[in-house]
Image (cartoon, rainbow, N blue to C red; front, top):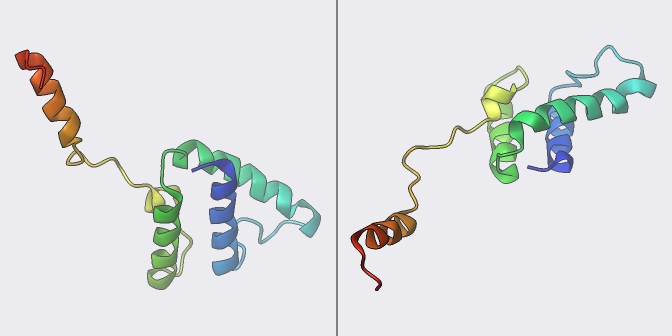
Amino acid sequence: MNKKEVLEIIQLIEKMYNNPFTKNILPSEQQIKIKTIAEAWHEFLEDQDFNQVRSKVKKHVLTSKFPPTIADLYELPSESKVNHEHLAFMRKLRSGSRD
C-alpha cells in the first residue's frame, strides 16, 4: 500500500468509528494528526494489499464496536504461497535440464 491508500484506510476508520484518532483534537489540528497516524501505519502496512485491508476494515466494522488496530488488518505472509512455476524451473536448473 502506498501512503495515500493508508491515509484512505485511516479516514475510513475515522468515519466509521466516530473519529477515534481525532476525538479530542481541535478541528484545525485534525488533518495533521490524521496524516501523522497514516505515516506511522504506512511503515507497517506498506507490504499489504489495499483492497484486502479495506475489506478487513469493512468486516471489522460489522463485528466489532472498537476500531481496528494494525494487527487486525495485517496479513502475515502464508508459508503455503509457493510459486510452483519458479520452484519447477529451479529444480530443472539444478538437475541440468535445459527444457
